[in-house]
Length: 402
Image 1: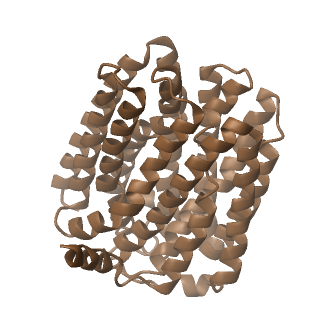
Image 2 (image 1 turned 180 degrees about the vertical axis):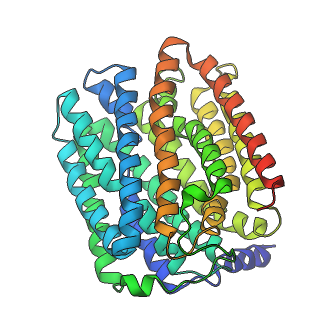
């Protein structure tokens, strides 16, 4: 039994290139300092702002992300993913430190916009980098390994963030900024420069498309993006209304919230690679997204259970939503990447990132507003219904000929 488990884990990590491992290490360092966004609504409340104002700050982050996604996608296709990744990490870290110095609400919103614009331009470039460093047979595994490092870093960052927030919120911004800059320097020293001409050596995605095809002409992709918006709208409650619910209704302190958030990243780090290895090729990607989305909706319904022990309700919710995330999200990148080539990959990645940013804008502000006006219970029911409709959409899209 033990030998079989060891062999399963070994097979799950087999076939990945050395550069993917190095890129994953860079992301681990970067995300180990990721804590500002998870605690932003609580930070705003600590400064004396309302729940809605805190939600609006996260929404502003989403608006900046939309701009950054488009700029990052175009920059990746024109200047290469290597340069864009370095610039986004280095200058994003600088802006994290600067944001911590802002005290007025207007200054926080303005600095948050520019921070997110720079920071989120990284994502399209990173998706192109993963595609370049992998081949079709190892692509989902490669994306999952980078996700693993991100979530392991998230686990470390969330736990550390809970400790730092209980001491002084200002520390969150310094640690986030320093780890971003450190990751930029690691990228520079560990991974060799990839020129634009090297980047454009197509690895093949298995889909025959025109080299100049715009993602706006890909109707299936656009429908997929719409579903991504509704999926992410629900998922982003994890970073906005959920921390407030944990504190105000479940009566958890900052340290307990950090531990609960860390459980999400730790579970993904332990299980996701094996789960992806077992699911890859067994079911169509869109079908897996549908089942994962449905399970995510169930996790929000669980928050309606009678309040017995706040910490264990929070941990049970986190367990279910993490399993849902692991079933759905690893295959999303592989699905849209399969519709690209090296001429338009950055633009596809930019629009994909923008879809998540749009959801962050809508979900962050509307979720906080509904929680404030209607209460958390009604919000969780609405989130479940959106998840149900989105899951049906994934199943229907799978039935179409791609």
